[in-house]
Amino acid sequence: MQQAMTGSTEAAALLDRVNRAARRQETPCGDGIMVWRSWGEGEPLVLLHGGSGSWRHWIRNIEPLARQRMVVCPDLPGLGESAMPPVTDSPAPVAALVRQGLGAVLGEGRRYDLVGFSFGALLAGHIAAQAGAELRSVTLVGAGALGLPRPRTELLKVRDKQGEARTAAHRHNLATLMLADPAAIDELALLIQDWNTEHGRFRSRGFAHSASLRDAIAQAKAPVALIYGERDAIAWPDLEARFAALRAVQPEAWTGVIPGAGHWVAYEAAESFNAMLLDMLRRRLGAG
Image (tube, rainbow, N blue to C red):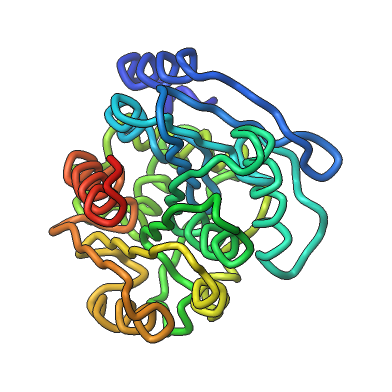
């Protein structure tokens, strides 16, 4: 990893501590394995990270949520430590692979609540379309693929850069797509962004411009919710259009907005996000 990305021993120590505390499991994925981590005890709460990401997208959520729930975070196929999935032009087979792994990790038929961020929201919607009674609820966070135009976000290439140029490119990409407040681009965010970028192989961005999530989530039998940061770069300034697109296929869906936060809302406004998620689960299901 580049020296510029390792400037904060505190950030690295946090990632290392949470990683070491995890229970690690592996399930089949393509020609290799899919890596799963879990923390805590109780009813399973499954968190699916975003595109070009890893379990690290949830670094500010895992410990607080694990005080009440068993938190389960995979590295999605082709991302983080997980192998590439079989070649596909649709999210549905990738979602089926994740669902199959989840059954092995939790035990077939064990009930769980599912939360997906960005690309993870797309997969969560497809899992919800495929799932039976084992899925208690699905919460979509920063979701695209609802059949609506998406604002352009011009991102810089990073892998050909070193040192300060690499750090500057990460800062640009985080400010453009992920975080609304430049002050939120701290050493931890940069460390996570660099590791995720280095290990990301599966390209999911093309799915975001489709209506794939809308069409899949229409088939969900479990309660559905949708959360955005108020300044989410893929939805602002018309979040209500996204909520309307969801309610067109899931009229009883719950919705929530976290003021001031961007796309990576679970990081930028972690305390508010954790509280909103747990409150939604309690009110929908009597679970927390």
